[in-house]
Length: 250
Image (cartoon, rainbow, N blue to C red; front, side):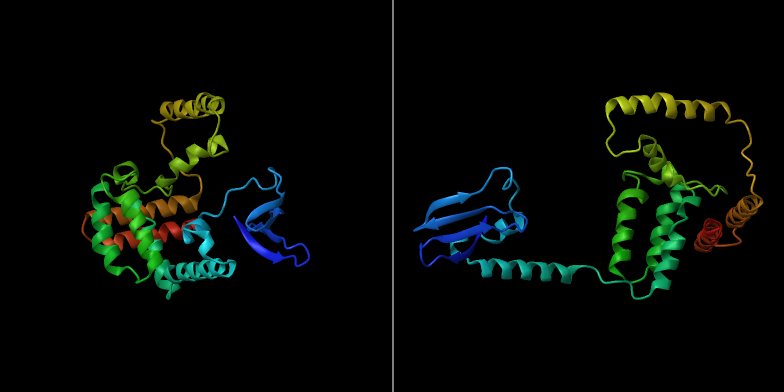
């Protein structure tokens, strides 16, 4: 797509150029006929702006100024619908922090806890709402891509079960590995690691760091208190979350 530049009074030619700023393609017209076309294929080989084409159906009815105004109005309208920034950072931080450790519940309790406890205390903010919807669609329902039966467990471990997919993909060092790289990693790294874990599954996994053992013991106490009815479900999640986040900061 081109835009008008100027008219040469002496020759009567109209000069046009590509609307892409980095493109140097130009052409000259006279009486709606192209006289000179300075447009090399390699220079002008780029896709036109999809939004510009969508803004105007018949380019002959619009001027360059009209197109720029339309574009400006569209961008301003899009800015207005973007979600606002959180109004209370501390409230959002507490909500997200407590939500981080729903993994310590039994799978059948995860969605119940989210609806009854977290949604009832959710801050009124568009970003938090979008994050909550994302969790429901991908992690919390039975028919989602990553249901609670795959990652939720009432365990005292401080490890994050939702990192398994990321840690598996990290072996390839790229988003889209070749088939040779994929087979090589699966045979020489992943398969070997799985064999080692299967053969050592009967061995007790004792943490060497005393601080880690102390926090695991606290998690076990919280799980026992929750099962015995000493603390409610929401209090249990908050206690576990605080214990885990305090350990992670160290």
